[in-house]
Image (cartoon, rainbow, N blue to C red; front, top):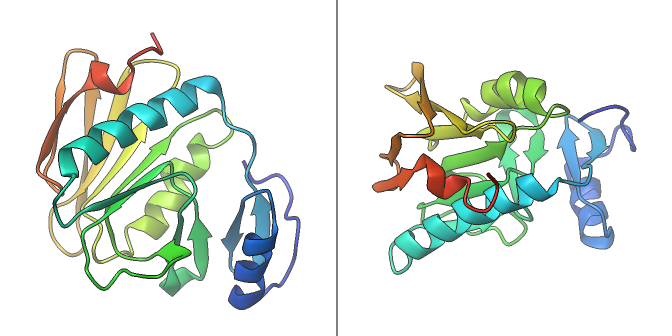
Length: 185
């Protein structure tokens, strides 16, 4: 995913201004700005399926669901990412151009992003005090890995396959794995 930074040594304010003016999205990692590549049809379908299920089930609650165009700020590491889906239930998470207090984050894996999603992003996401669950969704097979916070510092991983029901405790929602892959397989 990150082959070469497009801009170097930008401040956060410069990055945010760039994003407002650019037709393309970029992620920001400690002053370096990386373009986000075009996503596949499978990735779009999976993201839409998850977003639609969450949006429908959480309508009228304190939770707000955002898809790929909402930035996520991780202030301790000076990072902005664009997760496929993020959910926030924090009333003080009211910035218009980014969120910083998600309870749930979803990334759809691709060969280009899997290493970053499983390592760099996992490490950075775990710094978010509000985050309870991080879903990694495969495009190549029906498989979802979830990292769940068990207490302030410990996380554990669970894997779900085609026949499983996923219980998202962060938002009180159950989802069948096949619902995630509707129209994909």
